[in-house]
Length: 295
Image (cartoon, rainbow, N blue to C red; front, side, top):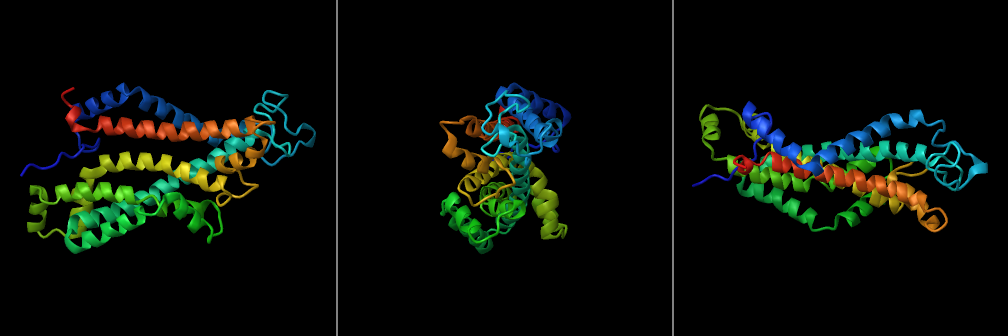
């Protein structure tokens, strides 16, 4: 029986194949744009607040609702007179941190569940994948809000809540790939040599699934940033005075006519971050697709 094609990974590719994968990625203009934007957003969020003369909590009461490019307030001020640029960049730290941490946690959980389900199959795999199906039946936003309503919101709890609702897609990807590798010759040989199940799963099989996991993890970051924005916008996420892009949008909604910049800038940041991670995920998927080797 023909085996399903498994996307290659940079670690397992010979040098010529790695070069082809890199060339395919670099030809994906949106993916390159996404990488540039992600690096720029990370650098701005990490170091940008130190370049602004105002702290995110400093109140300039005489300059409330100052428009962009007015005086030293490059992006204007909010209803309390706080510098909008300082809050926007500090909010980026929170939103991006939640996105990356949620990606790590959900990828670890999804990888373990998917590897166990795909390797053992039968009733163990059936039970685990039915749990995945059951969780996927619930709308993710409502599930997030239900969990957030009972937990004190902070960066750690919001990260764990988002990760708890984001690992199922990774589990499905890993389960499908591990199941297709389960009957390969190298797996059978390892079993005949008495290698433990854990060693076969994590040393022999998972290295061949790194490509799909990386693609899924990249898309999970975008999803986590979007989920954090949802729940913060609805008031169940990061709480003031700590800023995130989501709660900045929530605070700005009543000033859409009088001070539209309060909503425009965090909205643009969310859009750029989510779109950039999606572009990178698409580029990685194309770059690691063996079927494109002949192109």
